Every structure is written in C-alpha cells, then in structure tokens.
Length: 350
Image 1 (cartoon, rainbow, N blue to C red):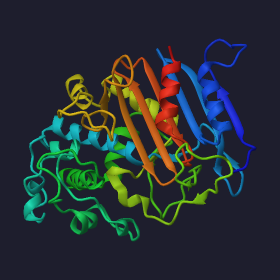
Image 2 (image 1 turned 135 degrees about the horizontal axis):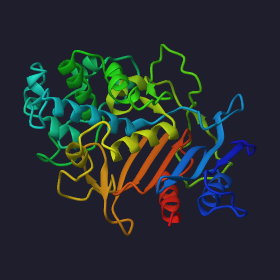
Image 3 (image 1 turned 180 degrees about the vertical axis):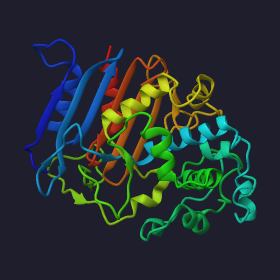
Image 4 (image 1 turned 135 degrees about the vertical axis):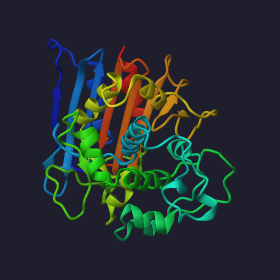
C-alpha cells in the first residue's frame, strides 16, 4: 500500500494544541498500515474525533473522505432487526411467529423456526456455500436454494450465519408485500435523512462507494504485505444480512435514533438492546441481543457491539449502554484489527 494518504481530522470542540488521544491512536494505526477508512468518535454528544484517511480507490489514488460510502457487511443485520421489530409493533409479526407461516415450502425441519430465533442466531441453519455469492440470487431464490437445517448444531444453540437474516429479509418482504430495499429506505433511511446509505446493487453505479482490498492480515502484517482486490462477488445477495452501504455520519444518525426511540418505542428499543439468550458468545464478544451483542466483560461498564466483515470491508460499532460513548469505524481493507483499534479508541475516551 502506498504511504501517501489524505488525512482529515475534524473536531468540533475548542481547538487543542496537542493531538488528542483518539487522533494519536488512529495516526499510529495508519502508520502501521492497520487503518484505511473513516472513524467517528462521539462522547456526551460531542464529536471527539472524525477521521478520513487512506484511499477509497487505491488504483486511481482516490482519497477517503467523510462522504465516502463503505459496504458495512453485517452491521446491516442491525437494520434488519429494527425493521423486524417495527413489524412486531404493528402486529404484522410476533417473535414466536414461525417462518413457515409465510413460507410453507420451507424444508420440513425448518418450519418450526421462529422470528425470535432468527434474530438471535438460534435457528440452527446451515451456513451458505461459497457459490451463494457467485451468481445473482434474489432473497426468494436464496431462501429456496440455501435454507437448510444443520443437523450438527445442538438444538437452540447459538450459531452465527448469514442465512438467518436472509430468511428474515424474505419474511419481511412477504409480510409487507414490499421489496427489502424499499423497506429500508422508507422506514429507516428516509426518516433519519441517511442520504449516504442504501443497498448495494451491481446494476447501479453508486457514487463515492469505496473499493475493497484484502490480504487477510487483520493487524498482523505490515505495509510490505501485498493487497489484493476483493474478488467478484454479488454483495447484494447478502440482502438483510450484509448488503448495506453507509458512512460514519449516517451510522451515527442511526445510533442517535435508537437513543431517542425515533424508530422504535422505548419498550421495543430496550428489547433490541437487551440480551435475549443466556451464554456469553466469545466469537461475538457478547450476549446476543436482537441485532447486536451486549458485552459486560471487556470494559468497566457494559458496551453494545456490532461488527461486520466481507473480504476487505470491515465495520465496527461500539456504543455504551447509556449512549454516552460511541465509536464507529469503517475500513475498506482488512489490514487492521478493528476490534483492537476500537477498544483502544473507546478506552481513550474518558
């Protein structure tokens, strides 16, 4: 990776003579070739640091800016969880609604799966194969092709996969008789003026969308390691599991909406952010909620976490339980360890 990057720091507090701790951490990560993207850190409603650093397109030297749009991978699942709970509030779904109520053609072993089990990854479905993203599939086609019970999974055990949320995507479409992209736009993006967010579509040119690059070093490499272009893949197939793109500023609007109960009632928002299943999941670093993970082990006070990763695209949300501290990171390379970087930034926000 080239060493010349555009660096933008915007802090909306009074000017400081010395570099603040968050900026120092991000600068060190950049120098180590472990950060290439955008970061927003907010404390008590005040922007501590906003960073745009590196290249959105390395081949043409296009710099990352605060308006650069990044595929956010599994952070999309938070949006899908919100849409699902909105339908619960309207009475169109219940958490104990069986998927077969809308999809009677599901395999017999999948017909008892409930909406609540899909939200928290306790449905016991198989992971999708690689070919699930090598040809174009609509959510309906994806469900027909790839939804199957995993006989190796213990009953009602946590098993993270994308199929759960692609099946949820299809349930939402059937329940509302609207395509998923329209549901996201009408019920989340438009009300919050998230004008730099949307669903990926290979048939459409999306302005300011970052390209993805990977070498699978995840913080263990250096600038001498070769970066590769992300391979051809139908990212739109991830649907409600991982097909959204956004910016750090737009994701901050979503977090603020959860804090202010703009999209959900206070009672439903509390459900969204409260652990629904026993057992701390080391892989996800938290107890599963409906769309996020509740971590009461890493920091002095509980933190809500949501991560996403598809090849070079990596995303991170860290939000304190009282919403006083927020860290949002979007990267278009996998050269850094976002969990470590996020933890360092979060800890530096006293």
